[in-house]
Amino acid sequence: MTDPGGTAGRRPAMFLGVLRLDRYSGLYLAVILIVVFSVMLPDTFGTTSNARVIASSAAIAGILTLGVTVSLAAGTFDISIAANMTFSICFMGALLNDGGVPWVLAVILTLAAGALVGAVNALLISTIGVESIIATLGMSSVLAALSFWAADGQTALLADAGETFTNLGTMSIATVPITVYYLAAVAVALWYMMEHTPIGRYLYAIGSNPQAAKLAGIRVGRLRWLSLIMTGALAALAGVILTMQLGAASFGAGTPYLLPAFAATFLGSTQILPGRFNVRGTITALYLLTIAVKGLQLQYPSLPWMKDMVEGLVLLVAVSITARAVRGRKA
Image 1 (tube, helix red, strand yellow):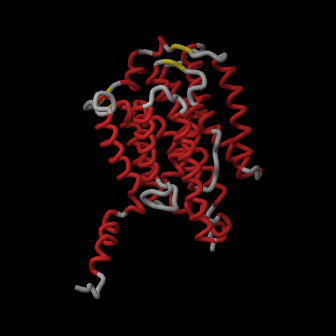
Image 2 (image 1 turned 30 degrees about the vertical axis):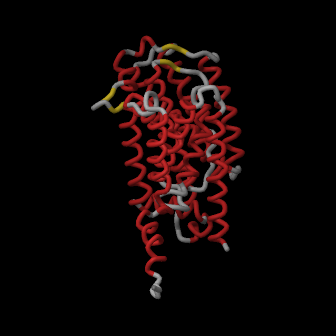
Image 3 (image 1 turned 90 degrees about the vertical axis):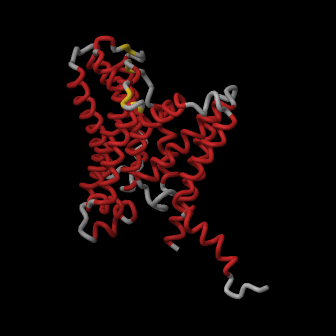
C-alpha cells in the first residue's frame, strides 16, 4: 500500500524536530554520557560524591567561561583572562598574608584589580586600536610577571584569613557545593542582561557587525569597554572563589582554565541559540565537557593527556563549525 502523502517519511523528521537536536544536542549527549559512564563505572562515576565534584569543579571554570562569553559576544578575544585569574589569586594572597588586609576588603580590591586589567585591555583595543589577540597576549605576559612578583613564585597558605573565608568556598547548601550557587547567580544575571536588555542586544550587534552597529548609533567603544571590564571582573571573581575553596593562593592556578573556557564557549555557540555566544549554551557545553573529561579520566587513569586531548579537539571542532556558519551567513 502506497503512502502518497509521505506520512511515514515525515514522522522521523517530525520527531527530530520535536527534539530540536540543532539546539539541544549537547544536553542530550550529556545525559547519554552520564548513563554510559554510570553503567561502566558505578563505584566511581555513578555516585553522588562524584556528581558534587563535577558540579563544583565546573562552577569555577564556568565563571571564567562566562567572562569569555561576554567578550566574544562583543567580538573581542580576551586571552588574558586566565592570566588575570592567576594574578587575582596571587594579588589576594599578598593582600591577606603580607598586607594583613581583612578578607572582605581583600576580595573587593581583588575584584577591582581584575576589572582594572579589563579596562587596560579596553584602552589598548578600543581606544588605541591594537588587535585584541595581540593586546591581551601582551597583557598575559605582563600579568604573569606581576603574579610571580606578588607571590614570589610560591603557593601561599592563608591560615590567617579566617574560617569564614574558607567556608565561603567549601561549604554546601542542601548538599550542593556553594560554588554552584555562585555560578548560578552569575549565569542568571548575565543571561538576563544579554538576552533581555538593550545592552545585550547592542553587544551582539557589535560582535556581528561593528561598522553597522556604529552607523545605527550604538556606542561601540563604550560597550566594548563594558564587556572587557566585565570579563576582567569575572576572571578575578573566579580567582577569589578558587582561593576560598583551596584556602591558599596557588601560584599559576588560573593557567589550566584557559583552553577549557574557550572550548566551552565556542561549543556553547552551537547550542540553545546556534550561531550566537550565549549563556545557556555555554553552561550546557561546560558541563558536557566536564562530564566527558571526568568519565574518561576515571575510565583511563593511566592516560593523563586525555583531558587536553578532549578539550583541544572540542575547541577545533567548535571553532570550525562557527567559522563555517559565519561563512554561510556572509554568502
